[in-house]
Length: 80
Image (cartoon, rainbow, N blue to C red; front, side, top):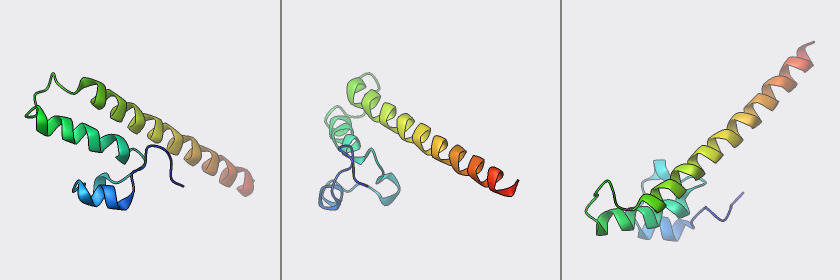
């Protein structure tokens, strides 16, 4: 279930991304972390990369919540 926002395991390992952050948006996290390191973690830098990553995280959350809602609805209908 790889998407265009998912980096390969080799890329993630090369950029030392922790296991907890290897999700559907991992390909957007790599350039964000590179930018953060180059800009010394200044909060006003890397805004575009951060926004793209956070948007991906939000869309992934919404996708998972819709799937959970459908699953719960199906279980509820199955009970009745």
